[in-house]
Length: 226
Image (cartoon, rainbow, N blue to C red; front, side, top):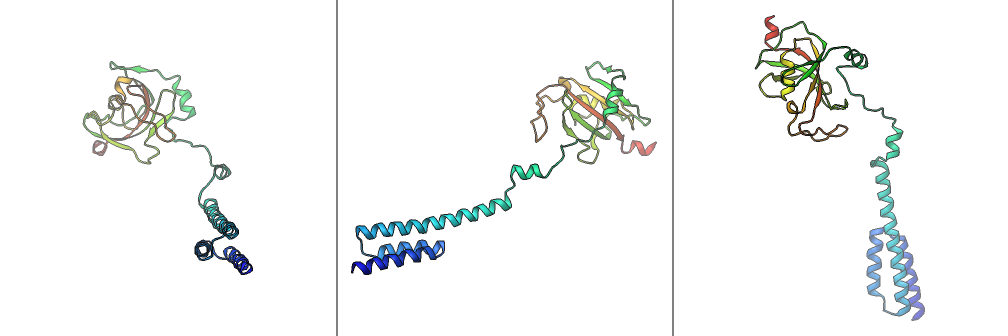
């Protein structure tokens, strides 16, 4: 009887190792219920069941490992891609920056300051007219936090109607179509509530000074009349 039980237990252990993970677990559980309970047999059953569980867990971990290696990129993969650093488009390049040093600064009664990089030859927009302008918005250190150049189209708005910050409104009203200007906008004429940080973009604190490079592209309707 004892020999038959030992053979039965040995057969049970082999079957556990040969079955698939799901079938092996179910088989081990079923056989544990069927065999008579004894100290020796309980130890044998426990060891066999542990081997089945280990085999099942190993297969699950292997499957997870394959999934991660295929679908989850690592930092090493990103570095190996050799992606270049982000280069943001500008309205004023390095040569323009050097020229700005020699351009006089004009200060208005509101405290707005500006330098004309290029004086346009077209008309100036009347208050309430729609204008198309490109812009690059920066914090005082020159870090870009917004730009129409990245969107690929000029920004359309009604100038002098309060659709943009006060400093931008005032700065564009005295420009001519085709002109390019750098605006130094003081805090009271900038963003009273500030702007949150975005990916790779700095936060703009409430009522903090900002800079805008602006080019007045055209004034719809007014340009057509010229």
